[in-house]
Length: 188
Image 1 (cartoon, one colour):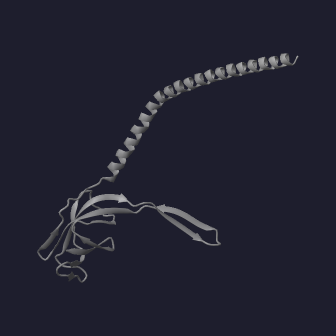
Image 2: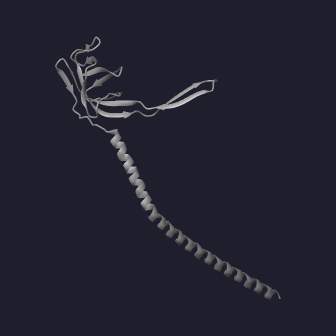
Image 3: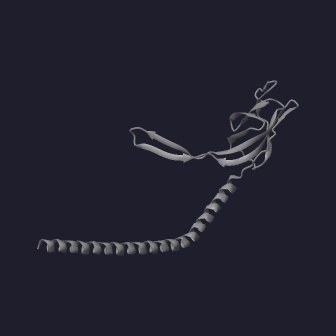
């Protein structure tokens, strides 16, 4: 069984178990209420209202109250130097369709409504970010000590390499002088 309901000046086709986003309704989160503005009920038999179907009702549960994604509103009139930029977030209510009843027949959903408190979720995420930031700051002090120790070790290695290179250069220079001295003595 399905129904076509009207809310907020718009029409929605719903079935039991559906989740629908409609324009913001003044209902509490988790509230269960009935929508009586049913324009049509379909299924085994179809009933079309003029304008509403008498005795038909759709039971819904409010699962979320939030805002949509940010929409860009850009206005421009060419060759007039007129440009306007704005953004907009539309408030909405998410409804879980629990049951549709008409003419003594009722179609119920097997699933349960999952209510999401967006503000609480957002607050939890913010607290998690703050905790992570504090942890990074605490670890930064220990990390700096480790970095300084690593830099000292690298500096010691560099000094040792330079000393080795100098001794190798000296050895090769003295070896070259001895060879040159032997060549000159043989010629003489």
